[in-house]
Amino acid sequence: MSAQTSKSSPPEVDMACCTLCMGCLEVCPEVFSFNEAAEFIEVAELKSYPEDKLREAINICPRNCISRPGSDT
Ligand code: SF4
Figure 1 (cartoon, helix red, strand yellow):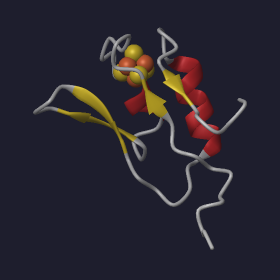
Figure 2 (figure 1 turned 90 degrees about the horizontal axis):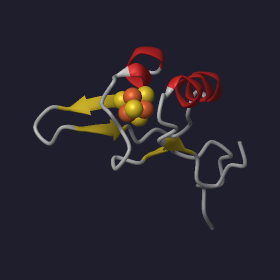
Figure 3 (figure 1 turned 120 degrees about the horizontal axis):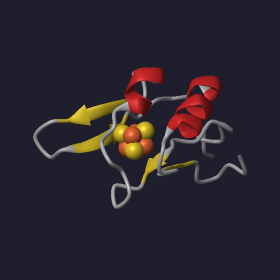
């Protein structure tokens, strides 16, 4: 039996198009962070994700690099 049936699925950042503008970090720092060593946007592993802030981050991303697998939005 899986307890991982939350509708809140982790976002994914497509680093091929990310410009490291840090916009997502500004609106949703609890999920997105900058991995300085490897220079990519890291997504935190949370039990549930703040939907409003995630949507804001997706909207603010200038390159549309943030997606939500398992979600239609
Ligand atoms: S907002 Fe988009 S382009 Fe900017 S750092 Fe986040 S994922 Fe990358």
